[in-house]
Picture 1: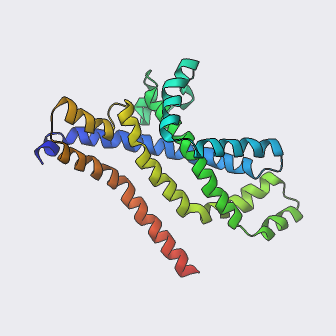
Picture 2: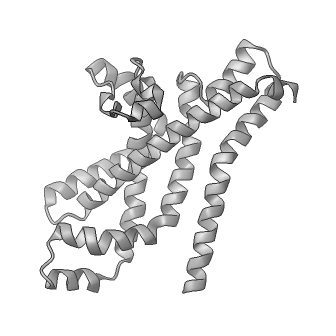
Length: 235
């Protein structure tokens, strides 16, 4: 317990950084997954091919490979995820404004990988929408975009909320890889720093890091259980 109490501030800062990484990556993956799902059901074959290629590649490549390619490969091509430097957002998340791009590239890699799974979860929700509703919308003169915006996607999001929640929980756990790859300050890096640099006992540090991840994943899992129970009662 001494190893935890003496380094509580380090654990707290690591938890905060990991939470920020997961929050930003979750938003990015939901946006990217939604776009990919729309591409996959597009009436234009080239767009469907793009969506299918994206999902096929990133669902079948390990996150470690994606992380190394994005974090270490893209900067050599001049891509440093500067698009994440959104004015005002770097005030809330100061690391977005730091010149070193590692935090931004970690967000990009995690969102890129998770977006493929978000796409498939959302597409399952789209398939759950009765076909008659989309046909009725077309009969009323709604375009494909209007049909998606007002009829299909709102119902698909509701149907896919539980699978999407499971994808986000998996993403939170996957975020641990970036600490071992060199992202300083997150929970995984805190684990390495305390054991390697300070010689703290491994078991208490490991338990503290585990509790940090459980604080993020367990409440989300309980929320998904409640949503599923309410739907069962409604049916």
